[in-house]
Length: 78
Image (cartoon, rainbow, N blue to C red):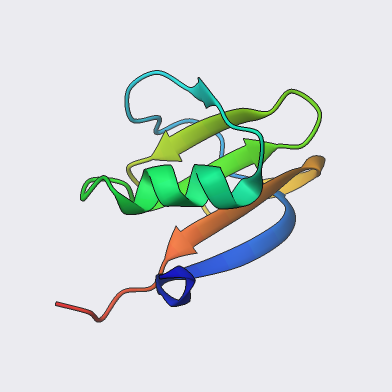
């Protein structure tokens, strides 16, 4: 269910990685990986490298990155 994530185009969340980054062919697959992990609050996916990094937090809010797409989980579903 993609309604639980808010997408941020050209955005990257550095640090706060959960486990090892994986390679995913699409943003949607990276999002799905995050949605299956309760600890995952956000993720960043790089279009060029296809690297998907799951995040425990968005930290300071992230930064601009022209090769990245990120998403964060909307709170309030407890």
